[in-house]
Amino acid sequence: MELQSISDNAKKRREIIIEIFETERRHVKLMKLLQNVFLEPLKRSKALSIELSNMLFPQSFFVIKDWHISFEAMLKQAWHEQQGMLLEIGSCLSIFDETYGDILKENNIKIIDFQRF
Image (cartoon, rainbow, N blue to C red; front, top):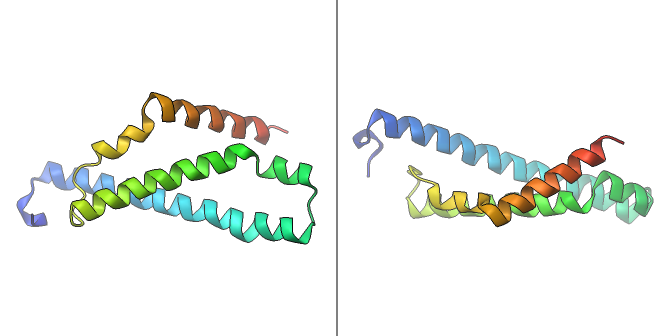
């Protein structure tokens, strides 16, 4: 399918889907950067106590990071399956279903609670 052959509505939807894809990609990159550039070196150097490390990077951070990595992988798979057109991501949105959605919601609440200290 050629981009010129799709309707204006489909083109607009594609732009929005690509923005979601790019935003997710940047978000995953940032979360990995936080872990690899900040947390891991601080742990190795023992500059932070375990308690402070757990406060700055609670378990919820890793749950959310893994969730976003999974979502990004689903978007990448859709990108490849649709040969770069990325006109539809409905199958990727199953990650927001009741089970995964509840896990994400619970862990986001925990992160917000940690930010209050």
